[in-house]
Length: 458
Ligand SMILES: Cc1ncc(COP(=O)(O)O)c(C=O)c1O
Image (cartoon, rainbow, N blue to C red):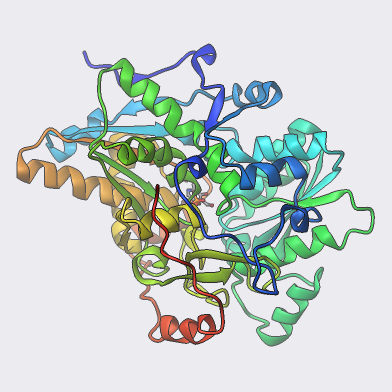
């Protein structure tokens, strides 16, 4: 009988993260004067250790023992052969997924929340602030802060705050404090509320609030944390792909296709980057980040310099962006409602190493139901975007009669997203299109910003 789960022992867990900045070039982040920012400019926002990782070009970075110890609560995560899905689809493809839903908060997010809390703790920081879209990241940081005895405050995008009340409960169990964003607690929040009192909020606004709350703390003991987009976040997530490589080697397989959903890019990057290194070195692999058709950052938006947040507090980052004031439609995949994309992922798309795809909400939920009824796990709404593409690839393999190996990331479970599944099953969900004119509007703003160069490796 073929094994479903391919496991590693705790001792086999990788001891280093892979840093893709050793192998690609990035345009630098720019400050308000248009010049590259210096590491020390970020010191009020992040602890130095994380800033060093953000700019490091060292290929392998040690995972501290204290971080490995917390990782061991749920890691190494299982690599699962999706035998039941293969049967339902009657495909010759061999389909594998990394099950990142097994962490305490239920997603890949603690892979970076834990090291971020650790580096803050050893830098003498007492409190962390952050934003959360779907609530997964806020839960992950609350969990990580509770492991290291730090306080945590989370600005949760209003639409998700209302849709997912139990995410707030989870954060509170882990001693986090969660407020709906935009809130009255920051200047950025108050300004948005004055203009748009009924706004569903956005990740861009919540990021502005969380940065402001960190840098305006007079004690100087608060720092901000971001759950996606930045280089150090992608670095920490590579534990996913590094484990997957070891696990696939145990069964003598190697992927032809790699798929992950992409909001800010972190779970996708975590799985894909260790394999991108192989692709750079000549392996033939198709690598697909998948985003919602309603927030099509990689597939439709230009590669530009833009702010990571709505108020413009962050440096200008080189990325695919729909514009920092873009207000995404109230999709149920809250974690995929982000106007930008990780600079590393954006750069790899610009170089043609990744092939982005988009799927709509109904197609994604239909795929989520197929997977829940075959593999058993109820996927997070974000994850379902990857699943729709997995099904498409498996069906293509059948048409071509090819024994393709498909590897994807099961970024989280949807046990706190059941309201959305109820609506889908009752036929009450619909697709959202990107509103007309969004890209043309943002391009007017981008016209005033510097342009990133199209960099090549080597
Ligand atoms: C389960 C899950 N998957 C994916 C994402 C998207 O984020 P990222 O692209 O950084 O992995 C989120 C974000 O909240 C999430 O909760």
